[in-house]
Image 1 (cartoon, rainbow, N blue to C red):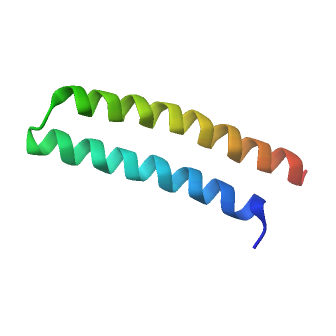
Image 2: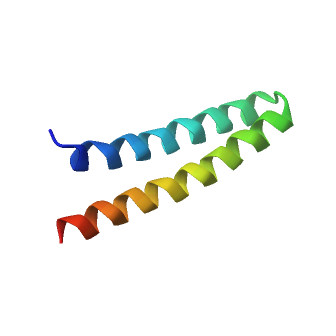
Length: 61
């Protein structure tokens, strides 16, 4: 398996994990600051994931 096949999947999985962690934290009524921090991480990871997917598509031609 090449890096160009693996990297987008890892990036998308990271986004999904942070999203689920933030939702679980919010549903349990835990610290709202933690939910906010997790959602900020999610937005950043989404940006990185989009860049990775676009770069892979561009390099594949």
